[in-house]
Image 1: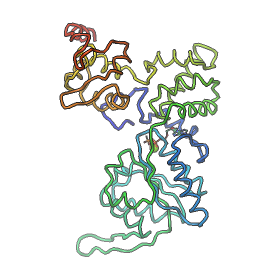
Image 2: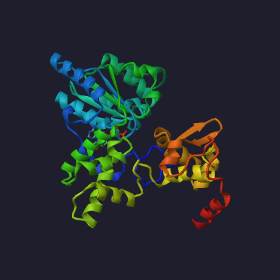
Image 3: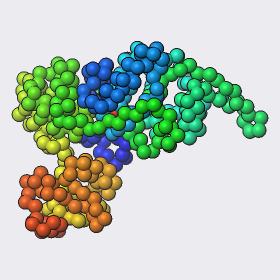
Image 4: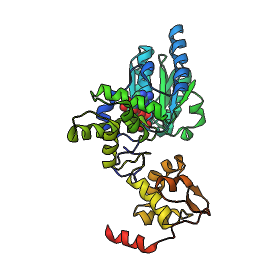
Length: 360
Ligand SMILES: Nc1ncnc2c1ncn2[C@@H]1O[C@H](COP(=O)(O)OP(=O)(O)OP(=O)(O)O)[C@@H](O)[C@H]1O
Ligand SMILES: [Mg+2]
C-alpha cells in the first residue's frame, strides 16, 4: 500500500509494496547477511552487533532500521533472526492500538526471540510507553481494573531483541529512539548494486538475463530493490510473450518503454510534470497548484508522488517563488535550456495547454 492516498494505484515505479510484490517478495528475500546486497555500512555494523551477541550467548541490543520503503528493512529484520538462530514474531505499529495488545505479545515471547515491529512510528502513545519499560528493564506493568481501584501488576519478561522499522525516523519520540542500541540507516542503492539485485532475482525466477540487461533494469529502478524486482517481472513477461524469454538489454529497454518507465526511472506522471514545467512555464518558477492544473492532477499527487523523485534526481527544485526546472531537466527531455535562468527557450503556450485539456 502506498503511504500516499494521492498515488495512482497501478503505478509501476511506486516504492510501496503492491499485492503482487507481497506474494513474490518472500521468495526473493535474501536469507543471510552475506546474501544481502549493498548497504555496506549497515551490514558491517550489524554483523558486529550480531557476532558479539552470539559470542556472549546473549540477546543483542535492540535494533532500529530506518529508511525509505522497499530498501530492505523487513528483509534485514528476518536476517537478524536467522543469523541469531532465533524465532521471529512479526507485528506492526498500527496493529498495536492498546497497551494490552502489546502486553499480550511481550508476555508470550520466548527467551532470545526477535520481535519485529514494523512501522513503529505508528504505535499508540500508551503502547509506546509500555514499550519503553519493556525495552529497558524487560518488565511491563499490566494494569488491572479501572479508575482509583486500578492496580499495576509487574510482569517480568524474558530477554528479547526488538527490531523496529520505520520510514519516518524523525517521527519517533526521542525516548523511544534512545532505547535502541543500534540504528541502521538504509540508503538508496547504487546502480551497480541494483544490477546485482536484478541478477540474483532473475536466477531465482529462472529468467535468463545478461549483465547489460540487468544494468538497464537497474538504471530505471530509482535506487530501490523492490522496484527493480517489479520491473524485472514486467520485462520477463515481455520477453516471454514477444520473444523467446531470454532478456537482453534491447528487450529490457523495449519492455520498460512499453510501461513508460524511461531510462532514468521517470514514469508518465513524472515526465508530464517536467514537460509542463519546461514547455508551458519556460522552466518556472511556477506555483504548485498551477503546475498541478497543467498536468491534470491533484496538487498533492504532484507534490507527494512526482516531486520527491524529481528533486532527488536534481531535475526540479522547490523555491520560495515556486517550482523551477534545472538544466538537467531540459537535457533529460531533449530540450535546450534557456540562456537566462527562469526564462524558457520555449515561451509559455497557453493554447497548447488548452488543447491538451480538451483532448482528455
Ligand atoms: N539488499 C538487498 N538485496 C537483495 N534484495 C533486496 C535487498 N533489499 C531488499 N531486497 C528485496 O526488495 C524487496 C523489498 O524489501 P523489503 O520488504 O525488505 O523492504 P522494506 O524496507 O521493508 O519496505 P517497506 O518500508 O515498504 O516495508 C524484497 O523482496 C527483497 O527481496
Ligand atoms: Mg517492510
